[in-house]
Image (cartoon, rainbow, N blue to C red):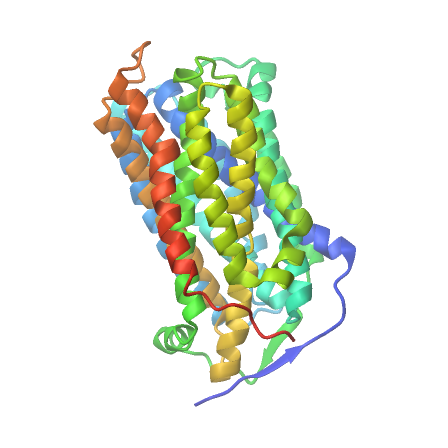
Length: 440
């Protein structure tokens, strides 16, 4: 078996570099959050695309995105660029990604088929570019440092960035749409431009300021088969991939449901801003203590505790669904539990890379990170299809002022019951997770 001489620098990472790395996730979550929270609503209620067509667009493009994630990881493992293994995949895609993000919110006044085609092409290109860019960013964590505790601190900065980006999107999007005053199908376009500029600046700074310290010398390029054979020696990595996919299904179902819940249950779509803001605050709160919780409890116990809290509190959310204050309080607590279970995914994945290296002498970080991201993107694809299918089964019609009882039950199914069922399955899988990685 060919082995790789892996050089690792132990020097502490500066605060500026940690914030620069965090900024990359602020940017990623601004674009991803805007798309996951508002694009379905924009397509159906503003651009006038049928819910069935939206489901097909989301399902097909996200499956392709998942494949691109995986292929990018394979390319990262085989890359030997002067600028690093992962960073070139970030800075070469940042500008075109920004352009496509803006275009997805600019569906022109075409025929029904023309609108569907425009939405499909622009969203597909956005998903491909996002997959390449975000796979590079996700893999970067395993290359910044090999120290487990330092990596967990970096992951806390990443979670903070993720929460900040999601919070900005939740809190500012609808007020900015109203403030810009653009009506009709281009109403979201000015906000998309603002978010695009932020994305460009933060990702550019991340790729410039972050330094890859885990380097390989004398590396023989592994085949895809060999990389996967090494990766599956980690049971925790296999479970992480499955749990990651399930968690993405839950997140997309709830994110997309909040606009419909606000508009048709609370009868005030402007309340979606408050609900989405509180929904994402959990990530910021989790970032404050995530590394300490992981060091104290370990990966497995954090998952079990977080998933259990989410299940109990989501039931309470349903009971309080007509009371906005109580609903928001228990939603914050439920999401805090879920964040405890899921926010460390990339740090845990980096831990499993170390585990595989100790078992095999190989370090297929690109394939392992990208395959996890691939399963997560497959989860988003499944969620898009499931979300649309549930609404369609409930006879949801955007043009109907009064929604039928079946449509209301469909919204509840996407917001409460399906997420609970999926998280219960994740909790079972978490019982088989490795308790704690070896400390370095």
